[in-house]
Structure formats: C-alpha cells, structure tokens
Length: 91
Image (cartoon, rainbow, N blue to C red; front, side, top):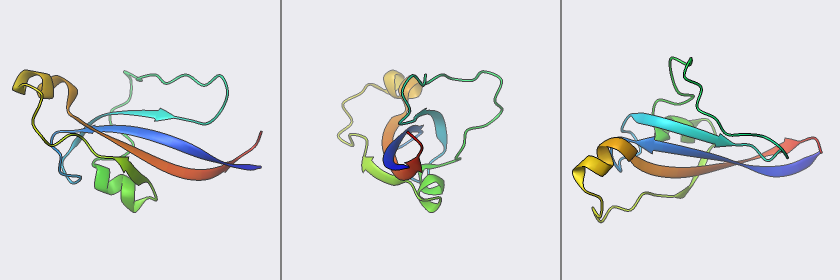
C-alpha cells in the first residue's frame, strides 16, 4: 500500500470556509479514474469546506479574494477551494 494524495475541489458561495458548498469534484490517485458530476445525487459529500476540514481534508488553495470576477461569473462558478487528504491506496 502506498500513501497517495486525494484532491477535492469544492466551490462555495463565498470565500468563507463555512459558506454553503455548491459543487464538488473528487480526484482520486488511481489510474484511469474519471471525475464526473452525478446528476442523481441529492447532496454533496460536505455541506461546507469547514465540514471537509473536520473530516481530515486540508486546504491547499484558497479562492482569490480580490474580487476579479464579475457578479454573474461568481454566481455560476462559486469560489473554488482545493483540499487534499493523504491516504493509503493499493497499487
């Protein structure tokens, strides 16, 4: 088993880690995995970035807080946080 980095991209309604999450993408360290949005899911894995932190995820990238996006762009994209978690995976 090898220690590998998992990546979780969480988009939130604001730059506050406690604001509601609006989308997620989980990138697993396994060859051939595909990141997809499941339209049948009713909820995300975590309601907020703070919830993910409670479950062991570490923030490695905070969204730009300088306000470079127009209001309409933010409504669609949200504010993206990138989190990591190191876990054991079989090779």
